[in-house]
Length: 254
Image 1 (tube, rainbow, N blue to C red):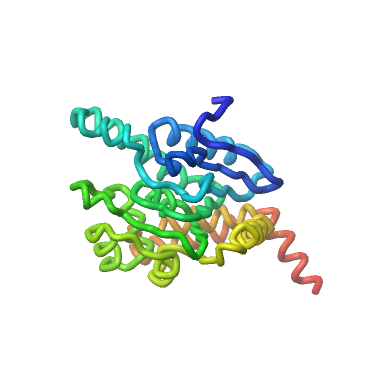
Image 2: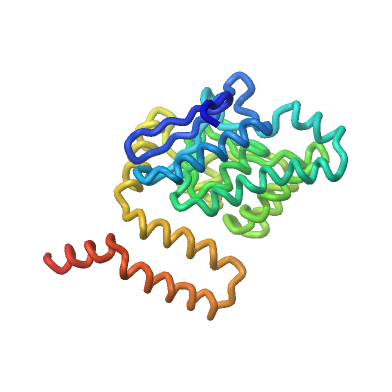
């Protein structure tokens, strides 16, 4: 895919920006935009100069969830057709989890339903103070099914249950308090603070960040002893990376 129609993809030094570009529809998700996000993530992952990927929304909102056309498609599709359709979003969540670089959601305004799911699937979430997060699917008899696999790892089980069964949005400050997101910044300082946060990430060892991300997520479902063994293996690999060798040499010279 050489041209994007519903996102913008641009790089700025070591940072890749994936910008959902449907502000007139509050950056609603459909098959095309999901495919384009996947393609942009692949491009960023294959670019050796990129250290961090940020997903953001054009306009006043991050993402309002599924496009109306998607809901109409769901209503008239068979079980098999719906199963194939949901597979596309599952692939996106898995791709984010498996990317060798950290993926950051920079959330302005509303991140609701599938939009909140997309943000939750990212490794880190930064939000402005007026942002809102929510999973309102229950209000139309639907469920945020796939994102629950990630949500229950981000917040307590009871908080996750409350979020997905009440369907009510929460503020950025509340989302930070319960551990759903990482940082909240004043609206007037949001762009500057996000830039500073991303720039800090780019200065970290790429190999160490990759090994940390992979190990952290691989530990899901492991027994205590297996997790320790995986940590031992990752520790051994890290010791022979160029970044670690240089870091140790620099430290010993102090």
